[in-house]
Length: 333
Length: 267
Image (cartoon, rainbow over all chains, first blue to last red; front, side, top):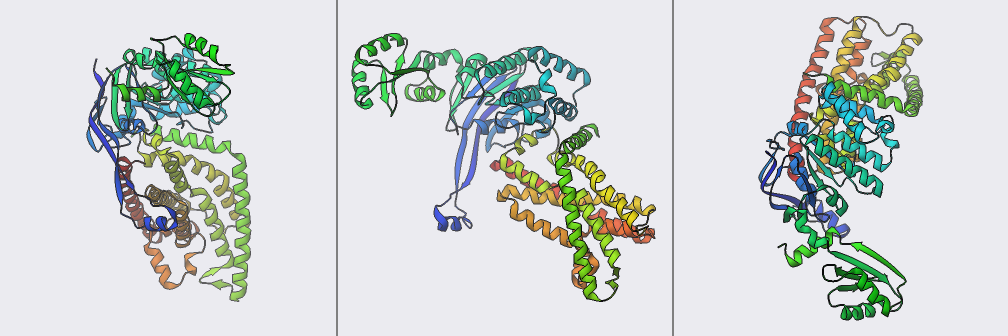
């Protein structure tokens, strides 16, 4: 297997004007040369093999999009080396474009006013896809999802889910070596998310396409990625398979309960009774973070029910943000 | 060169334009209103001048020129500046840059479909109407061929200027004021709103040395020149060709420099 993406000690810095406040400040800014340097990506290295699906995680503003833009060739790294399918992306952007497919969850590359099939035809000509490849790709799509009703629908009349699905199909159409998916399931309902995950999984299997997936949805990661990379504040925190990370988010759950009375006081009491758990309170909920390896959530709930009249409850999986916080606090190993 | 990937964009542009029937209709009505204003304005100008011929042009000469200039404007205008500005502000430009095609050509060919539709919906009907109403004031001969060549070059010059102005948005992050300024300058100095013959001597000479007159004045002069002698037509076309090459190279260089701005500092 050959390395599809090689990133070595990549750093990206932006110069940002120091903005001042108020009318006077804004006027001064017109002539200001007062720049500060922001380091969006800080010394990142990784290698991705052909056919891998890598989950690229991190909180908002962590530098995920910047890294992806560098891999696609839209941004040039300040220092370090990037090779994507053997190309230096920012030097041969056009050549690189032929090898990659991109979906940005919030935007569409499709022709807004035209039926989907027209967008496909345009892409076929732009990417110079041969008739046979194009037909076999459409057949493959047909076997994976029910695209017939979508093909003749103008993109602007599609629901967000249909549009995202179409965008993903469009990104895979020229059979690229690598596809970058930037939050593809954002804002979609559960069944559409499942559809899209199945589709990505199938395309990756069939075409051996390397996929780089950024997301905030742990469901995406569970369904698709065997390996994840986590960055925060531009620095790489974690690069390993998902199994290793399971113990950070798999065994932790947050139990949220609503009771009457002063929540802060109750939270303190509960904290004393349940020393294994981390308890906190906000205006509405008391949150109890339970480590299921030590204590079962049901036991905690039974115990709480003895002391309080619980009016409402929720059970939450730990979020990416919490995982990252835990990694920060406790280290990975 | 593989033309197919460009022509597919033209085709898409035509289909796209045909989706918006109402917009074409509104544009048509807007043009008629504009022409009515132009008619009465110049009628008043000629009435106050007291002579039939002002600056070597009769009232009907002027009117024919301006009607055709308006038609040519709605045919060749691409609103590239808005498009680039919007793409930059919304960040959509990232997706356009990731097409396996140079952005300048990609945008041009995406727009080329609107030339075809606008030619059929505005320029051709206006031209035919002018020919019929004026009973042959517009010569129909070899000048039409020269005109076609001239219009193609005008479109390329216009696009290159628009593209550069649009690119400025990368640095300013706002496009409105710059575009308004560009429009005023181009429309005035190109002879699209007032025939160059009406300019004061000095300004006219300056205008002839600028690229703008190649956009409207040059093709219209060629179209309305019945004699179409090579010795009068060729210098005009030659000057256009010069600006064409010059502007394309300039916009290419400017884009290259601006692209560095994107890749180094983020769009």
